[in-house]
Length: 280
Image 1 (tube, rainbow, N blue to C red):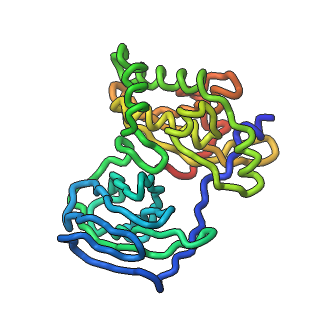
Image 2 (image 1 turned 60 degrees about the horizontal axis):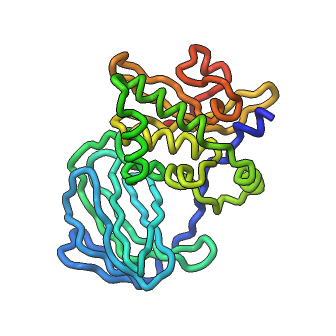
């Protein structure tokens, strides 16, 4: 049972990019650029930590691709009557970034729309800002974070209030888990969806903790790693939260806290059954 509770197939997005249709590039937009049914409004060539990607399209599904050196990050886009406006933090350091709008063709195949290049001049602490599936700028998440932490006097108190709210109010989504085991990743993920549905897998638990924590002024990491089982390891996700008054990061596993009814908050033996692989 424990193996079932903690196991998760981390998100995989396999997209084939076709570059032979509608590919338009500019290094510094002064006016709008149109390509592949997408109109992209102007973006300054020099930015300070984030960009706002705004425009409109006749297409029904688009994504935004952010590239810095060898790192690629994909972002879903909400379309309202064909219009979009997405604020994206540039979390991979200062320097040159490629920003592309991708247009869905079929299955997992996308073609390029407008592409621009910008120079980021500000270093961003990625553990304090909204990132993929960690929507700490959402008004409902901000409101809940403020309500939960309004009486907290320390970072530890903030972290505990957020941890226990998630543990006591979010249920494990066994149906989503089964879909993942069957390699069906076309599921909604992230803090907003988890808050709305009150359920999720471990990735969702950790995304919600991160969003609530960042919205309340904490530095919060999402951790990808393994649960160390008796016979095998299983992919898992949890959080690290920085406690400023103690000058250290603590481990928090709200999934296990919820499903196993055991406190997984700054346990001294946390790494007895956890193995950290990556932080983001």
